[in-house]
Length: 455
Image 1 (cartoon, rainbow, N blue to C red):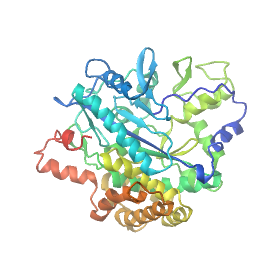
Image 2: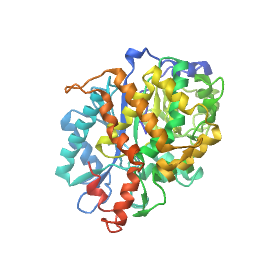
Image 3: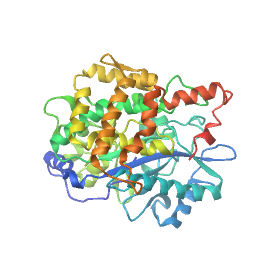
């Protein structure tokens, strides 16, 4: 969940302006970049408890400690709730205190890998002095909702009150999930459409490859990705597989129509979040928003509203891949490698479309439902996800080799796929390894996760 968009006071005068805002993200291939995001659970190492915001071992103390590395604090109502640096990266807080790195837009995966390594080194240095650790997985395995402190952000208060009106698992999403994501560019509307369709169809494959959340409240949940399952009962207005993306005529305007029908959460004015939950952005365009009667939105309001939809792939001025569980260090670099390899090479993108183009919408929806439960054993169009994973990872590796971006050792970006290729070859998700350990050497306890899967 991003910080509020940098305010733009340009008034919105037409629906076309909203599509133009999306289209303005188009850029030539030489200017395409890679923006990564990952979230992690912070905990006290002596008793494995979540961190409150305040206190000597709280989230604020962690953020204050990171300032020594050149981060600049961002406050809301006197509380530091984010950090920014001079590259465009940020450290932000999810509702339950999950710590998120939103990376700078970088040119290659070697740079993103270095950025992630540097961030983890910094937070570990600060955390060591505080007796804090960080856990990489998709769903909090031990703490209940009631155990989890809320962070002091106005946007989260509004969402907290609205979420239970739309689904039973929205508060779990806010408090107990972590993901790894990548944001990728497009050249044009046509390029966006092709990338959107391929990545949306294959998002359940990412869910299976990265599945690492088989526990809830200290016990097996019956799922391999409890995080992915949460999104199926969070809010039907703003989640899902977006069937219209695969329909003829899909483009920026059609996505605008979708977003205009997503109920609002808030309007951000003068440093404060104004509750507009359940209200219509269409009414806002006409000056009829109950929360701000007589006012019309500006482009900053639209940019903020775009962050309040949570489909499996999200369009802003770039495409955001949203299907994967958080995980350990190597998989944080594997996620962007997977999608860059598939989407940033034209021939590979075409080949990936050939893999998925004949799937029906019913098959795509069924795969979305099955992947959190069955992992790589899920089936679509007569094929197992494991078989598809092997094929698609081969395509991604080819796409990365074609980019010819080398590190100091002369190795190309395909090295970051090694961990996923091992998972596909075994047919076992990370969650299945966790469940085996739980039933065996962990002795029916999830506590060992906090050391074995800590950064």
